[in-house]
Image (cartoon, rainbow, N blue to C red; front, side, top):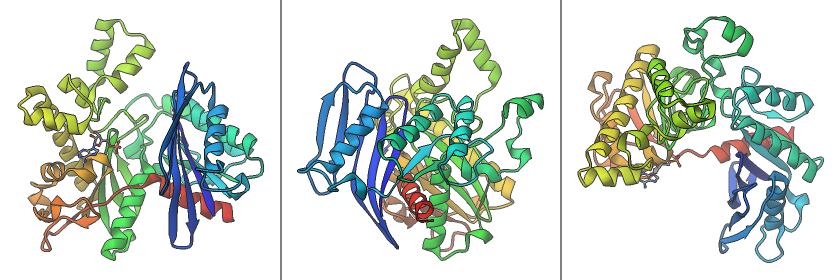
Length: 399
Ligand code: AMP
């Protein structure tokens, strides 16, 4: 089955075409449409085994963007399929499923209405995700559409972990609570690690650390998410590239009043101006930050220290929440590529019975990086959220 995977943002569309068959999958093409709605947009198209291309042209809306993607896929010279009828289903990443969705679903009118309702919870992402679904329905009528939610894996979190200490009417009336994000990634890497170790996930306590530009930590007890560091929005938790992570709300009120920020400015501040970028006053990119720290830049060194510290604090608290831990999994652009990050966050966890294997830790592959006698294991596992979307889509579309 050929599955088109779409991740629609407000001004961009990331896409992949994957051929899914029993036990294997082939990436046929991937790319991104950018700057939708701006005077000049572009589409980058990377067919597997062929040359990459980029075309610049105005892309007024998502329909025009999707149209470009479909045309690229069937282009007689550089395309990877000969006609659109070879696309069997389309899987969409959807940021927020609220309390409605605890798993991926085939899209129908009711599903669309619920995603629409959740736009209030994720105003930056859900409208674009829904727009992607509606557009594909128009461009490819009759082709099954599947919604895969960032929040659904965390719907098992108990009420004491998802309830904020605010008047309960805000939960009753506005559904304000912890939801958590990166769910597809946390679930995927935990399951993949257990498969690798030959473990039954329903008997294990696992802490997954997704460390990318956005970062979150999840406690997975017996196969279910029981707590996660992101909350009502993806701003909370550990320090991120540009997001604050956990912060006293009073400190934000102080800054907003001092700067006279309106809602949009305040939202931009907590999402785009803080985190590693804010502390270092240099960059949100981990590699650049590590380079600056190596050159002796004091604020970059401090940003790194804060990043490591907030992660360790979550690991400790989740070990407490689950009364122990059998496995820590590290993933994401930073976690997968950077041995020193893993050394910093897992190197001194002897109270959890963890000893890192310095040599194994130099890996960039899926691998155990703790010593054989380490009581709890540590693993690096590459995440693949698009594969999860393609797999769920193929499964549901076949039904
Ligand atoms: P992600 O959001 O998962 O794509 O991760 C993006 C982050 O991973 C950025 O901060 C990058 O600097 C970082 N990153 C990507 N590749 C590497 C690498 N080879 N070494 C260190 N950090 C990396």
